[in-house]
Image (cartoon, chains in turn orange, yellow):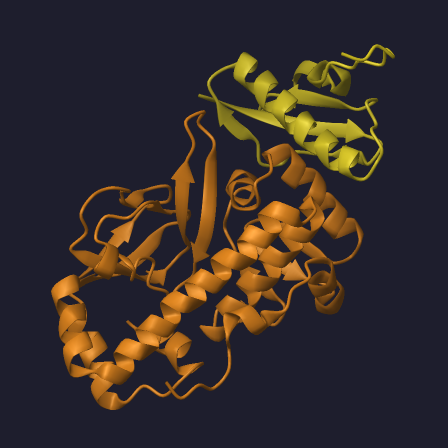
Length: 239
Length: 84
């Protein structure tokens, strides 16, 4: 059940059998959600964190005029809100973009992990730092990049993150988001996303169709998106 | 809610909207079209050109065109020399 989570962690550092068992034991419940369900409400006190097992989740904030900005996507194996362990009330909400299955990990279990497993605690701290790095990358996209570059960067990032957890087939992956979801990720309108996807397709870089991304030219797509996977810290660390 | 399809037709060619958007009524679809055009034009303006000759075709699920929104409806242009 936590295999994708373990793949994510082990792509960066060792996880001992004892640590692995502690993670397994920390799960209180597994829940299934439909698409477009809010699973963490901003401002509400959280007593557990959510580990995504299947599907795509997003962190987001709503604006007063009805617009929504998605600030990060989560793929299977991610904790969507490990930071709610220390922050309790989050400044953002979390919702499902596709049907999802998630494990709930009570904060008291996380507290026990911090007391008994200092290395695993550092590893979890490291993963929240990766989330912060992803936020910085999105900040650069939203503030400075062209529409073409924003979407190219997003497709590259998700490819690398899904590959780590074994959810790509070569240069292709399931990504069952709508154009409206994509627009909310990259700060554009659905119309603008539609036009930009057409340009990406016509340049032979990538196709997004039927909930699936197929990358035709990784090098050029990465160049257009100024994508450097360094911010995802996929290398062997000894924390 | 109704599903409206907002097809783009401008200098970049024709982009069919295969997915559509759930919106309350045609007026909301028009507002989404206007917002979309402004988003496209703002990107063009950043690159130093502005093509106002395009249009958005708003269609229903059967492919009937319900409304055509010209790009120039999305912006008010001033070209006079007067300085405030």
